Image (cartoon, rainbow, N blue to C red):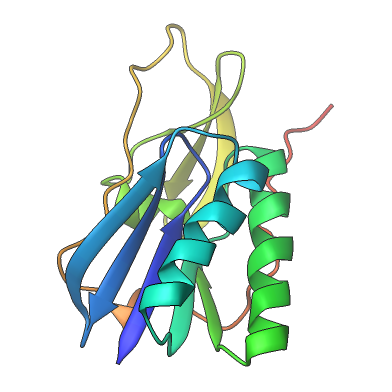
Length: 150
């Protein structure tokens, strides 16, 4: 079984290619999500037969979340790939995720919310795990938008 795991809510965009849940290859791009996903998938689909796609559906950059969801959902419908999603906290050691300005998304006790932090956090990276834990994902793939009160 060949599965893909897409992390596109931050730069660089990372895609892990997994055989029987083990990471066999990583591809990445510094380009915008809308520019890089078609290019990366074009190369991946030439070389691999995909069984399913996993991705982070938020929180993070609203444009990246939208572009990823539309691209991956369309690919799922056209090619028949099962699509699974998870929030990003499982892949950055539950660290704050940049929202905007000095606001960050946090997750505690299963609840995601925004907080203002006095100083900006250094860039927290998202990591592709060596083994894909499918239990962290679900079939509810709609974008995870967490908006602060205005």
